[in-house]
Length: 45
Image 1 (tube, rainbow, N blue to C red):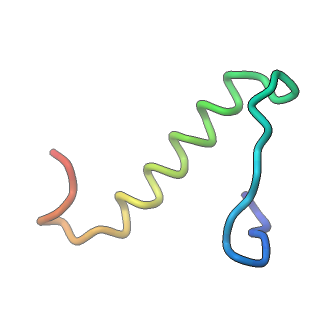
Image 2 (cartoon, helix red, strand yellow):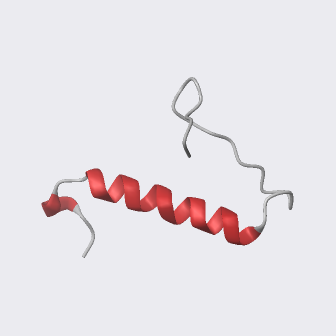
């Protein structure tokens, strides 16, 4: 997300207001971002 909240977190409601596809996309982007910051030796294969 372009803007992170005060503590570096954003909240996304998973009660049907946000389409499932968008939630999955956010999860995938978050995972890719975190894995991309890991040292290569600790990245999943």
